[in-house]
Image (cartoon, rainbow, N blue to C red; front, top):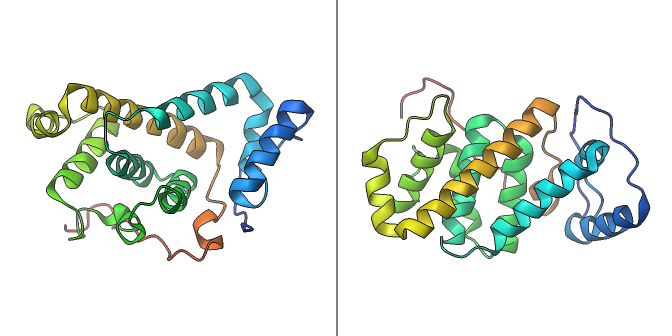
Amino acid sequence: MSTTSTVTARIPAAPITGLYGALVKRFAGRMFGRVPESLGVLWHHLPALKASMAYGQKLQKWDECDETLKTYAHMAVASLVGCSWCLDFNYFMARDKGLDEDMAREVPRWRESDVFSPLERQVMEYAEAASLTPPTVTDEMVEPLLAALGPAGLIELTNVIGFANLTTRSNVALGIESEGFAAACGMRPLAERPAVGSPA
């Protein structure tokens, strides 16, 4: 698989070098078909890149919360913040995780879509509320999630949402945009998020 880059990063990509760089490029090549240009942008600060990747890998190993719910939460944050890279990457990874692609592509318009369960909608509402400034999470939002997921599951979901905000907001600030992972695999285009202020 090859991807088409649309990256317009505000920091030029650095050469990915060294033994660690060779390992990273090999891994990225297997996953994406080439080394994402965004990786070169983040290569300027290797400790920060390693820390982010390490925490992301740890999050993926946790299993107190359903993988589908965590993916939808991350995509809901990416759609809200406007991170096309994270939105496209998580949509692309939905196939690798065996998730329903047709449902995943609908996340940007989850409020209007009728494909999601009540719990999935509650998760995405919580993800958006936790991501606003200031957060707008209410006891009424948390109560059904706590009942459905349990304390550990809700904490895990909240950590995923927090990490999603770190990555999405960093990418948007740095001008890192979608590199077309999903499109290069022949996946349908993501549904578009309704304009702000449009009726639900």
